[in-house]
Image (cartoon, rainbow, N blue to C red; front, side, top):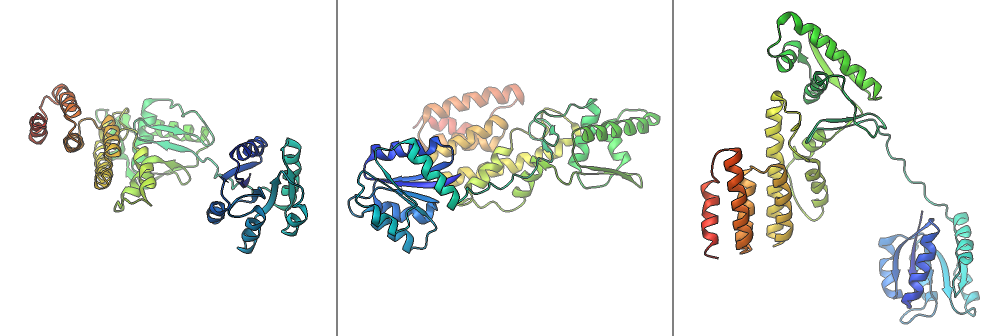
Length: 373
């Protein structure tokens, strides 16, 4: 799709032209200006393929603007849109590809696009990498085959669990004993091999049917799973949080994406006993990242975003002392007595129901101090 800017000192003319251009589905208007001077200052940033310029404008005419755009070496085609035909000769001296007289019509626009496509073919969008399969581990394990929109259905719960266990140990060799103890801790010894072989077969069959590239090998009494081309959310989360988090205006969007990956505790709905250490590790990483975000926003006195981050985090880790304490403290800083008392009462009931304890001393102190606000 071609990128265009419109420069015209009459707002209705800008809106009509924008509507006609975008209606074609072949041009995207990336900027519209009622000042030629303003338009000139933004050309380098917007990088349009074509500029639709009115001619008679205050400060700088469309002809002058076209000359300055060309002098700056910008590879931009010029189309003049005007109510007067007396400038046609001058327009074509700056190599304008068209000179459209108002009132505008769809025919004029179609003619212009035809000329544009001959001179500047629409850029080919880079092909998105082919979907080689996706795996999501936060909340519940979901495995999507290459190009599939529905998650795979495992033949048995043990096949799903074995895959999850090997996924947690991805690219590492794992002994048969470690696998069987994790999945069948109370099974009779003579049945363990049969259970394992059968379940390995089911995992392989499921992955094959989903067109997921894998290598599930057994060498010297040890199993190893490799998924060389599959996207895994926990792997992305771990890779980015392995490095020191430095929040800035330039990096904040990248780290927001990391926060969004954490849709719930790791394999939370699967409730595997052997995954508990990873659950705690990822939860610590997530809470640490939330902490960094809150401090970043508080430093800029952006309390609204600090509260938003904390409220969202507490839907995923509602029993975290540090995050609950931070939210109470934020309400205290804002002198929001009502919100502080409401949140304290909420977590007091939650802690009692889930943990059989009361909020810690620091949270109780903030609650008591709230009544002095």
